[in-house]
Amino acid sequence: MDEPALILEAQRGDLDAFNRLVLDYQTPVYNLAYRIMGEGDSAADATQETFISAHKNLHHYRGGSFKAWLMRIVTNACYDELRRRKRRPAASLEALTVVPEGPDADSEASLASKDESPEDHAERVELARAIQDCLNRLPDDMRTVAVMCDVQGMDYAEIADNIGAALGTVKSRLSRARARLRDCLQGVRELLPAAFRLEEESSL
Amino acid sequence: MITSQDFDRLSAYVDNQLSASEKARLEARLAREPELKAALADLRLTVRVLRSLPTIRPPRNFTLSRAQAEAHARPRLGLFPALRLATALAAFAFIAVVASDLFVLQSREAAPAAAPEVALSVAQVTASPETDEVGGAAGAEAQSTPTAQVEVLAPLAVTPTEQTEAAADQTTAPTATPETSKALRLTMTSTPTPAVIAEAQDAVGESAGNSAANPPSAQPPALPPLRYMEIGLAVLTVLLALAAWQWRKR
Image 1: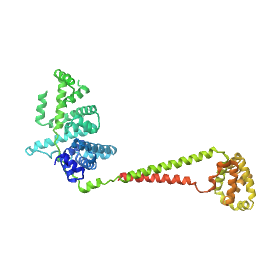
Image 2 (image 1 turned 60 degrees about the vertical axis):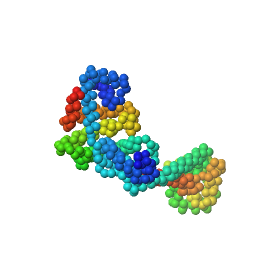
Image 3 (image 1 turned 180 degrees about the vertical axis):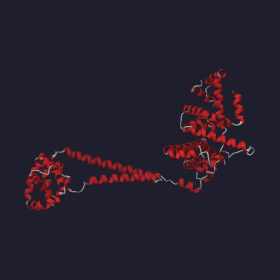
Image 4 (image 1 turned 30 degrees about the vertical axis):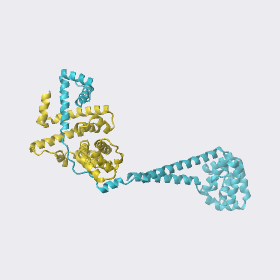
């Protein structure tokens, strides 16, 4: 069954059809939530909330990209949670300090390729953590735009639609986020794989 | 020196978001400004590093169970609009009753000042705890000499200013003139007998005309029914608002 048919069935109350859509989109939804929230538990909560909300509001979906619709929902779910954290700063600090440990270290490596050496694997995990750490240091609105554009590969119009901002706002927010990320990533240059370093040298 | 505007342009250039003319201008500068070119290389590397972030496998499936789907499909807010409407109606009724109460009060004040003031002085005295103390002593006298009461009440009603002073004296200075305090005591002790209430009303009516046809002092310790309605509606509004709020929170 193709996507429009699945959506129609789901709108008619077929839970199996809806759950097939969940399986199709849970990875991008979870990944966006993970990069915005900065850790796995909050990302899982936001993802679950997204699909519950999508199911509840399925009758409001009026065509267009289903993925974009879900991305909008998960972005709002993340924003809501970040706002809640701001109101309760103690909980927020706790959540941030927990980040690098535990199952998240594994989740960064969860899609590891089979043929890489243990050293390469460890370096890759460390680099991913360092990048996420730099992302976590950004203000929420900058991080969201940077994640959507540079991690998720969305275009400016999609991002503007997602966060309900003007195209110019997206442009300037992204530029400022990249400037900060560039400065932050200076500290982890030695973690960059050889391919990155070679390209950097050749482009100068 | 790379300005923030330069960096904005480089960022848009990386994403191919510059207009043709902007792009041409920037490329011309890139060809002759090594610093700008280095900044672009730095920016490209940053973007590439970010894009290198791996896709993370979700820790579990997020499919909904039947129970989850049904729990959220149930119209949980069904009662909320009804409660909200009821709250609004109760609040509206409360405002309407308060407004009409204020209107009645205002129209009473607009009428000749004597009537309400006589009523007030009588009400004040009847409500005072002195009633019991004096009741025993003067009550018998008052009841046995009804003509005396009328004599006393009539001048009160005819000269409103005097009687207002008397009321003030009674509350502020206990050493009122014997005449005034006697008059007030007589009025006070006479309240339990309906006949005397009627007389008092008559006296008020004579002085104030028809505007004081129904003075509130006629019902001694009880509040007027309008006040009960106001209190009742206020309590109802608050309760309904709380119920609506609780229901929404669930």
